[in-house]
Image (cartoon, rainbow, N blue to C red):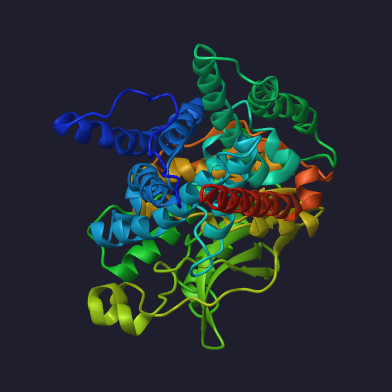
Amino acid sequence: MTVTATSVDRPEGLRQPPAKGARARLIRLVPAVVSALSGVLLYVSFPPRTLWWLALPAFAGFAWALRGRTWKTALGLGYLFGLGFLLPLLVWTGVEVGPGPWIALVLVEAVYVALVGAGITVVSRLPGWPMWAAALWTAGEAVRARMPFGGFPWGKVAFGQADGVFLPLAALGGTPVLGFGVVLCGFGLFEIVRLVLRRREGEVRRSAAAVALLSVAVPVVSAVGARALVSDKAEAGTATVAVIQGNVPRAGLEFNAQRRAVLDYHARETRRLAARVAAGKEPRPDFVLWPENSSDIDPFAAPDAAAVIQGAAEAIDAPVSVGSVVERDGRLLNEQILWDPAKGPLQTYDKRQVQPFGEYLPMRSLIGAINGEWTSMVRQDFSRGDKPGVFGFGRVKVGLATCYEAAFDWAVRDTVTHGAQMISVPSNNATFDRSEMTYQQLAMSRVRAVEHSRTVTVPVTSGVSAVIMPDGRVARHTGMFVPAHIDMKVPLRTSETPATRLGILPELALLLVAAGGLGWGGAVAAHGRRAGQV
């Protein structure tokens, strides 16, 4: 006789008799509702709110919804968690193009979360399951940051922790270790509550209780210990830097006139700063940073644009980093240009991680067949640069990560390994109006400051522009859609954090942990199925 073991698709702790009718259907919906609401809770933990700690109950709720489920059910619950998180988080992607691309992006990105949910159920019966499960989450983020189309890391758990106690973990092992610590702590909290409830029914093994406590204690203690790696002390002197926010015209100009207006606005704000410097009201900057797209008119092809930039540089009497769009050898490039008041353009940096569907269009013919208007928005694809951006402003080396690149670990790290003493993230967020996108991106730069122990400047066409200290603190910032500038002295640093030195190794280690957990969990499940047959 063969007896096949059946799986009860219900979290541990719900041991009531089977319900009937409408009540049964409602009970079956509870995990789905909890999963979706936990995703929403994770979204609420992200900037511009400072509710970073909500990530912990978000992952605790997700763990409850997944506990005891089959992998097929967990696939759906994970997808709901992903939708609850990503739909509100990425709503800004539809500001200019409508809801279609926004929803399509979320539907694709949530697949990664669904697969992680299915994997968590595989490891959920293993000793120390919070560790395996948190590593799986990190693995999902790692894959999502690389594919398709070069990846989309937006929404990494680490980027919601700029105000949190776990932030120093970024200096220890970068965004993978920071995110892993947060998720591990959230799963650990669920496990503690689960074991407390089970203790009422019987004895709980000390080893299980110890693992649950360690899942919470280790991330917290590690974060406290890693605070020793966070410092805003100058190691190579200081530099006075000016960040220019020229603003953009709101409406009423055709495209070419608007591009010229943006250039004129940034030149005007630079001359205004120069007048204040001449009057002794502000210190003379060693160099000036303009945002991405501050001159969408190619100054190498348009003498009038070059004259405007040259005049601004001469007025402030300092080199200026200008964000421009240039065409060279038939290639369209999103380029930063170091413009010296005496020698003109000296260095360039071409953006390496260009944005799919924004700066280039994958599957152009297919998308054109679906909606011709989308192809007209990206008439010509931008080409990628192939060298790290480090500008030499005299004795000061400034690393450049243009806008979207700030989301990618490698694009920021290799500026530091190539000698950058501070980092600049020139951006253009005007397309996304007053959405949360600007604050989400600012939080990324705060995490990068701690990760590499560098001052980070964020010049943005329309705001929010900011100067961030190496400890992640926003020293000064502007408002949105106003002309403004920041002129201040910042520390220069040369030492490398463990995160900088280790690079991708912590992420690889967590990927191996995730793979090991899946292999072990799969073997245990297969053994259980064989043992269930007599």
